[in-house]
Image (cartoon, rainbow, N blue to C red; front, side, top):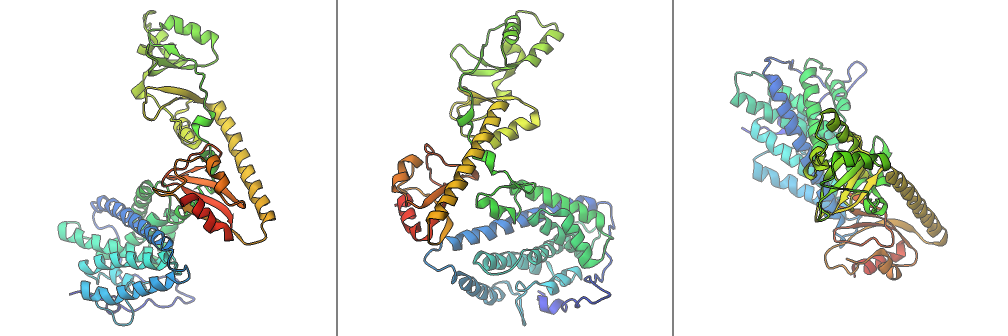
Length: 483
């Protein structure tokens, strides 16, 4: 028998002066040491649910954003109509019944109480989990008002309850109430969505006043957070919206500046190298007269074979290596090298160099990793930082200058280039004359990497251009870029 949310329990009591928590009628605690092996699995599942929720939300938002034929102020009404159709349709499909309000509408505290009381069966909680993701994505994606906190708790309780039922069916020797997993799942899914594990734990305490299940709660929340961070590339549901607009937040700071300079803009192309058959004796002489401590090893054909450093030579001498040994024998082979590519950003290089304490990286062609095209060192990165600062200042100055000239409304717009657009393959310098006079190209988002545009930047399919423009010139801007 499928139990509807409104049939399972009443709404939780309104908090008063003596109670600020949702009462949990069942005492939840660890009953078997084997449960500590189950809660991390729940954490991984919570991370997957959180990622699906985040992806679904932004997919729906993108869908409505591309729907240019419908005015933006009408789109929430369309989302509301779809929600109404969902509410009318899912009882006929799923068999779930509702009387006063659909279970996946509103905050759903009565449904959550049903899972905590072990009153909702497996088929019901799975259906409600999927429906809640759809309903929330439609609401927020269409431009409606709402948050992600209560939906996350709802999804978590449904997931946890389903997990608990499956555990009891498949492993009856590990007795645990599904409500216990529902309680932990609430915090785990919220942590997976918001990447706020401590907040999730504290909120669960505030809501329930129950600390008897603290260890599995902490374990599950941490696993969910770490796993979802991996799947979402470190972004939460909040920061992902910013990063999609070209604003990268790390430790509370914008780190775009080093993403705006590419390796090929600052790398050294006049590289000191050594030949593969150079002996270690000859290499010691090169070190004594040169200013570098790290040298690429080249074949007779000019192909990159590896790298040799002063540290490699020191280890060879301490090991009494024969004097006739070549640098290729004591250095690192190409396969073991950390390399950079010309189209990498300086931020990419910093992530490669920093953890390993490297001072220089060979730059190789992406199409032919054996072709050495340059070297990038710490001093090049310092120069890149100065270039990035200069570019950012220039853009800010151009924006301010445009604002002073323009007497009408201005705004930032994002334009995504697609196959067949007239500006593909052209440089900024080439398309410049066709752009409206009062607009400034601010940045190019290419596969998540922010590029500060300059004259020889080539536009490619999939690029998202952020442009500061007079509102009345936007149509001309789009025509110039897309045709």
